[in-house]
Length: 246
Image 1 (tube, rainbow, N blue to C red):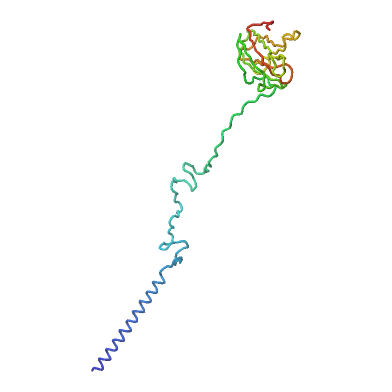
Image 2: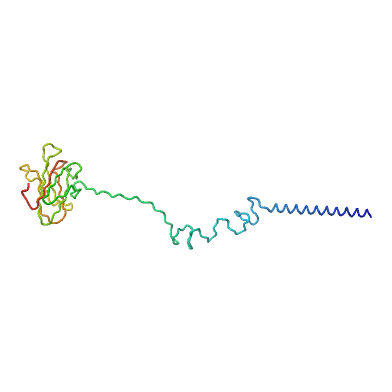
């Protein structure tokens, strides 16, 4: 009887040992499967596409990516990518323009010999006088002589007499300036005069004129002949036609 109990106990121990070994093998196999199913860094799981992050399902967009039809921040409905706010479909973005430098106005130049009015040396009045000096820096004429321009307001039908008297020349000692007077209107010469009485060595100039047009006229004081001559002079204006004014 005792022998039978001993055999039965041994069989139970063997069965328990066999069952324990089977359970250990099952746990080891389960651990191996879990280890194999854990994704490693850089590995692509079955069904994942390149660039997908772990945990993403097929068809999901990556963070920061725009889906087709999505608008960028600030875009209005109907705007296409790259369009600026306020643009209509088909319009091209405007390129910033470069700032332009302001152009400086050019000073008008007076060609040599032009009888047009240059910079006025002064204004003449009826019964008035003026003193001047021909010197470098004055208007240069085509023949090389110098000229001073004076404005004078004349009235149509009212005669006027203008006398220009030469003073001492500054480029030649002990010689009188040989004056030459020109009356102009809008740059056009009306009349001119050289010597009052050359026979008696009176080289002053005198203009007797009755205007046909009212307005600003120009008296140009220059010298007779070519070349640069410098010196003093004075101008006197008389109302009326005075043929013997000296």
